Length: 318
Ligand code: GLV
Image (cartoon, rainbow, N blue to C red; front, side, top):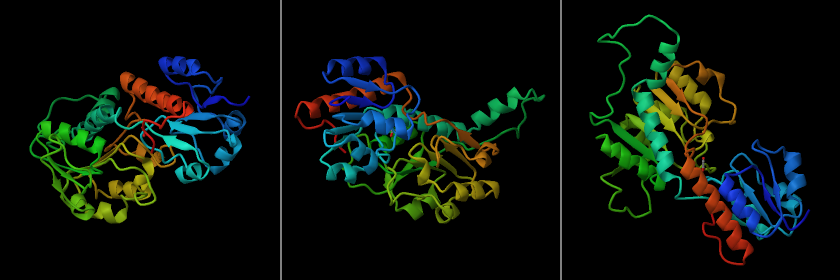
């Protein structure tokens, strides 16, 4: 096959239908990720690739596609799985899906903040053990979120700001890392702090930066050492932003209050040491996993493909 659109994984029905109407034939993967070998086979001669964050789109895959390839449309706002420089060298446009998943990701983040602070998952697990219990004044107390707890937002972009808006509704005080993007009317009040101060002052630190060489292991032994021993870390960004070994050490030694993690180093593997810690809440990369959000992400990726194949600029190039 050549001149086709290669969709690495089954998207939502509407997006699959729109893709089928675009014109070029479709080569479609399954619901599960393709193997590297299947990807190389199915990409050969493609004009467009619709990829997901589980697909590694590197120089080798771009070469396997060949010179016909014009666009890689990643169904995610993050694009650390795509070698953007290698794509640019080959004249291939890379697009992502910004904007449409801010609310869903912020909702999940706020859920994780509350779950970690108020020990919701731990309480649920406890009841399921069938252990006899009765209300007690000292039983399973956690962090008072709405008593002015301080939220430190690392990465005050679209998602970070959406989280901050929700946190303010819970009477949290919001700190954030400095940003060059001007603040909109709903983006404050916020106090900007450099990372070391943000780690030190926050009761909850939440990560909303992209994964880049500069943010890899941004949360390491040194940053964890700055955090309050009662503080919570929430990660709905990318797993490798956190050094898992350092996080596990801090939690095991009682130097950190807890963590809520939606993303993992070496995903989909979850470090068994995290599974063993009661003060850790875990979700399987659900940040954007809401029905309308997923439809919007798929639709945006498909529109990007359509625009580029029609010779027009992509809507959301990275
Ligand atoms: C999800 O993690 C995304 O980047 O969209």
